Amino acid sequence: MAALLLGAFGYRYAFFGGSLVLSVVWLFFFFNQRNRPADVGLALPPEPGEDSDADADSDSDSDSGWSSQVIISVVLVGVFYFFIKFIRYALLSWAPYFLKLNFGLSGSDAGFLSIVFDLAGIAGIVASGWVSDRYFHSRRAKLSLLLIIGMLVACVLLATVGRSGVWIFTGAMALIGFTLFGPDALMSGTAAIDIGAKRAGLAAGIINGTGQIGAVVQELLIGSLYKRGGGRLGPIFAVLVLSAALAVVMLGIILWRNARGVSDV
Image (cartoon, rainbow, N blue to C red; front, side, top):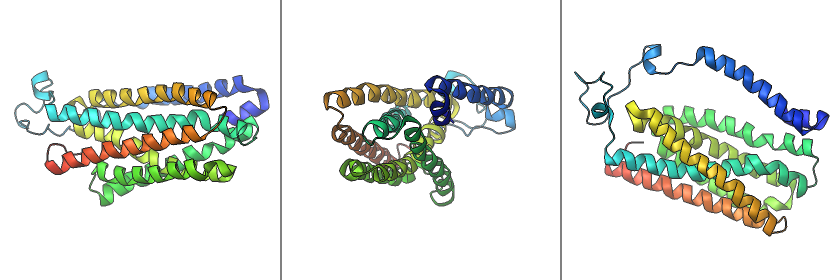
């Protein structure tokens, strides 16, 4: 929709149209959002090692405090999410720009073509959620590691042959979206609930906040690399590969901790 409005009326109307859609979503959210599991008749599971009887319903800090291992788990997932958000927002922000300047597409066509990243990502979220519950017994990190390894392969594909043609670039971008969006949702949402339990909101805030730092850093770094490199995409793709590799390392550490019994993600 934004690309259509951009092509028909100019870039300002892309923002107006997006704001209008978001306003409708906001209204729906305002009247339908529930803040706690108890609002829909669900109960939170007790924290690991927490007394689930008399004190299970207490909201005091002593009942919902985090152990050092939980804090480490939150930090590790947050760092993982930093690299995921770095890659995600790099493609969201810059792919239309690259398609226009490096492949000669019009602004609206570049916007239309960049949608494949999100469309593939939506499919990846649905598929990863279903597979996680059905085959991985809700073990988020195992499935996320497999997908992130796939994302690393897709980033290497983008870095090695992505510059050779617009459709190869687009295909690699779609593969990155499919393999990225699932771990993004699993590790920042459901895993935060699993780790944080009664303080799931705090865990999600720390994890997502760390990820948003990655979203900010990529804007500064990629813009600088593009300018200094005279429009070359090679250095930018190399940074994406490095970020994917570091995301794999973070998930590997999380799984190692799971195997030791000090976390359960």
